[in-house]
Amino acid sequence: MSLPSCALTFIKNILCGNSVLRSTFRTFLNSQILLAEGEIALISSQIARLDILNIVTNLEIQTLKAVQNKIQSDLNVLGVPMAANASCPTISVFLAQAQGGAAAKKLAALQNLIYTLNRRQYVANALTAEQKQLQSYVATAQEFLNNIDSVCNP
Image 1 (cartoon, rainbow, N blue to C red):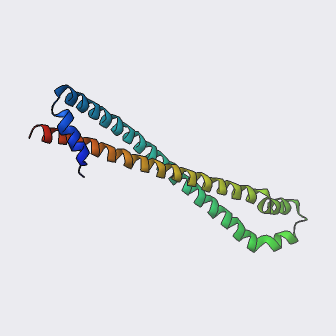
Image 2 (image 1 turned 90 degrees about the vertical axis):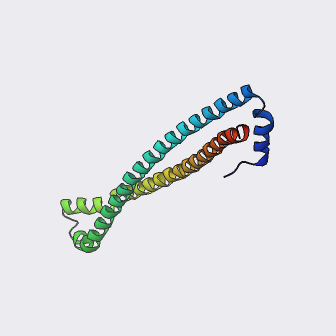
Image 3 (image 1 turned 90 degrees about the horizontal axis):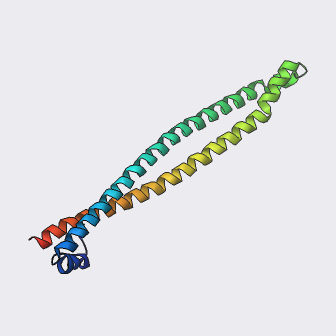
């Protein structure tokens, strides 16, 4: 990456001729670099945290799907015989539980987990984009500092 000619002109015409401005600008850029690197570190930890949460959420989703599939599979096999014996209170409770609100609640929980996962992934993508932008800024600022040395002290 190279700085545009206007930046090199600024260094040559403004900073090289004034040691106070050059020193102040160096301090300014170094402070900006430190601040951006701190933000990059914070964003990195946020992304890592989101990744961990997404891994756990994916495990929960897979577990719920497996349980739901197992229940449905069992109902496919046992539904007719259980329905035929629904006069037995115990069988009736088992059948009602399997067919009733429990499955709907599991489905709602699954949909909620998927929504949460997607939302976290969106946030992680936005944070990654911000992190890349800050890394580019740091690289440009560092190159500017390097050019101050090479242009003013050939």
